[in-house]
Image 1 (cartoon, rainbow, N blue to C red):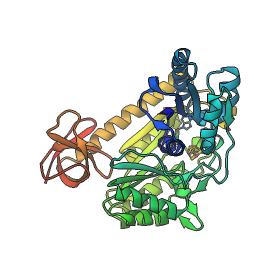
Image 2 (image 1 turned 45 degrees about the vertical axis):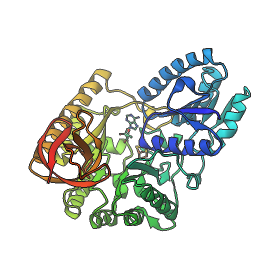
Image 3 (image 1 turned 90 degrees about the horizontal axis):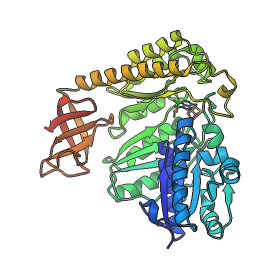
Image 4 (image 1 turned 90 degrees about the vertical axis):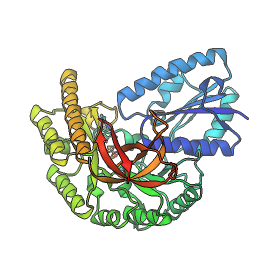
Length: 433
Ligand code: 5AD
Ligand code: SF4
């Protein structure tokens, strides 16, 4: 049995894709291992969204090529977004790898690996309008939490983003295939499912929209929490908000990337909404779903961003008070519309603005945590706390980590009510009520 080791970079979609890849490979007689040094095949599932992600992967490839010196039969491959972007470069110029397979060609991996064992290089980078891998059973260890990718690709074409080029057009899996996957997870004792897509709100299976999918998913097993990510403000419908409010097991948490607080920059980003519209959505969601919290993505230093634009971003952060944020420096990506714009915000200024954003977010997160002291939260017990086996660690519906004294009559996978007594920067500490 050939042994495969896969390393995953980038977003949760890639984590879910790695499970699909392992599903395909294990059906074809490959064994999944956790140790690169004893592998026959090493695959890196890569990310192209920012340049630093790609640089890290190049560094890692150099390292892994050293393993190849000792073991010339070793097959080294690149999967995911970089495969799509850099096919020629990786195989022909850098001669760094044996195979390069993009996100829509994973079914052909066994064939590519076979050829690679015979010394033949392989490239499979065609994008598909229909591939969803819905018939593939992802390879998952037993556990509490599972990712399910429900749609693939993106049609939004934000001007900074390489995803529509690396992952292709939007397409959705059938609702019935997703529901039956959740049924299987329920039978295996899973307690949390995250529905994934580059833009899940665009989900559409013959007229069933994302709200219909959430409704059906929540109905499978009331002990399974449903989360989803990521949303585009353009498609966050009232129906979706009402569906969230109707089901106790759909987490009251929305990841709603804003990217910038300036309408001028949002327009250049091709985000298709104004800040007023965005803030209106947040207000509406808070009315419909009491206690809902938000997280976001923010880009600092987009082309032509002025200090005033930057201040508008900080203002929006103060208005919304996000629970959390993923914050990035703008990184020009070849092939995108923004790549043709002058990347004119100096590195130093980008960094300074990013730091402003991070500092503000930290203080907001701290305040929001502080406000939870004295409140009761429903916590899913995930395991013993890292620091003490006399404590359990779990998460709230809003994805916050809670640590509390372990009691014998509770176990991993149970839901408990925990009263929050104090907070540290990243953790809530409490006790079961
Ligand atoms: N530069 C910086 N950040 C980017 N993102 C996407 N493309 C870029 C880029 N070129 C960020 C966006 C997106 C998140 C997944 O990554 O904020 O929401
Ligand atoms: Fe990229 Fe925009 Fe699509 Fe998100 S919605 S994947 S940022 S193009």
